[in-house]
Image 1 (cartoon, rainbow, N blue to C red):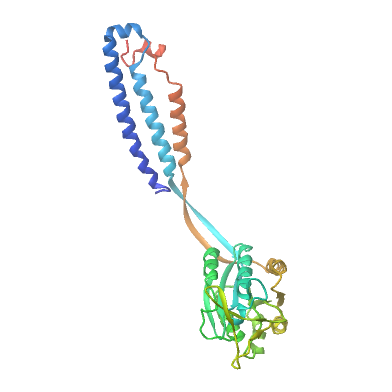
Image 2: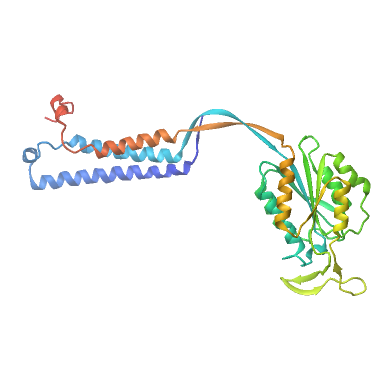
Length: 344
């Protein structure tokens, strides 16, 4: 079995016939020019050591050198070996609050963007773990299934905004219920749920749901985003503030971070609460927590790997280049005595 790593380099083979044609034209021109100045008998007397064979041999060496360089660039892989790759890590689900209150700008640039940056930084610090993302407001919906493709997860993360869900409000219960089901039931990996929210909840949080989190083998980390003193919620058009969110009485809404409810959730579930306004503290704490959690094997893949052979062709090319450099266009005395090429 074989495989060509970069077959598009084969197009360079078109160079060889061009070089061959150019060399033939040059040799014909050279022969004609020599005949114009002297006869073949006189030329033999003037240049007795000149070897016509070696001129042709040098051309062959040059063409072979180019040929093997091109083959080395194509990188043919010949022969196979079976490799086994094991992945060990932790399953991490991010539950991100996307209610309108997350648009408050008491943390720069706003609570939602701050949360997304935290998630992105956490993902950057991970190894072979799996990550998933759910979003929630009045209801919770999955956004990214558990995956080791961090680049794709971060791409989907950037597209998240408060307009994903039309129904507003904040139902932490819905987020918790979906998060529990979001983990792979057939996997024995350790599980971490990181919930990022300002804590504003319009539904009563079920104590039973929170208490069931450790029973499911889930480590809960709640991250509070925003200022406890509160801030207004700007409504923007094309990036420019048009007005501020108002209640039914026409009063401007002031949204405050409810860190107490997030702390209570963490305490009841034997988890940890983190102040999300300090990025470094959040990252350090989460890294420490993940380091303390045992890594579990969740994936074993066997695949066929082709052995690269470009080194052989590169060596052959180098050999012919060196041979061409040391091959002179004069007759070799000991070969001349053997008269192998009828040069006498």
